Length: 331
Image (cartoon, rainbow, N blue to C red; front, side, top):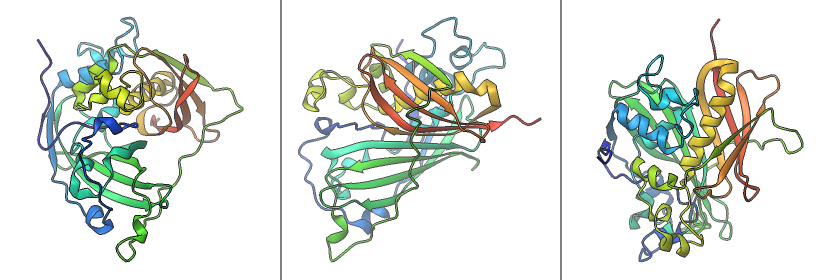
């Protein structure tokens, strides 16, 4: 029996467009960004309900359960585990999302040249294993890097319970490779101040911890069940048009795998839950590859770690500038 889809209002299809030029409708006509129109774009609230089945499916799409003896993974995929079913904090990124609106013609965005650059997440309260949530989305930053350098867009989502309890704040940084120079158009337009930069990970210091995960060959097909139906992650012909030899894994799946690696290696040292997780995407992952997450303690800052991830088969960094923070266990 196929898994039931989550109930959600508004569009689905969370998109991580790592070079997904061929996956977007090529008939879109590109017009220049109107800063004020785009910055003030209205996003209706996205109301969504999910069940324990959906929570377990999310964890399974990231590879939890590959090893049936992994005690760290079991509570996220088995409701009978001691303490009940747990929720991976990164599940917040697939909840309350408004869909791939950047491809709409009225945005002025060149949707053929989008790159998912960074993902930043703060958790304000634990996600329940099932429940109803509301996603409130807005554009917070439009930054012009210049006509030859593109632009940066930052979108923010606050995820709340139906009662208004704030669960998470999620920021997505998107590189608009084809939209640089907008501030010089239409008689001159504003350009926002960038977000504070994520800090690089150490280059010459051996990591304090490492975690290895073999990405399942069907991982991208499974992760599509989270709502991202971008054919770049399923159709070899679409992947080829986008410059890839085969379908790639979703960036947010890599994000989730790396977050669990940090949880598995470090949470027991601190005691409290993961409360923030930020990364920069530097290259795609292909299903079937081996992902190595390298983690360093932050000197003088208990509960804080920096990280990066690379594919062993290609010795290719795929996540950089990573930072994870755990709440300290009260004593």
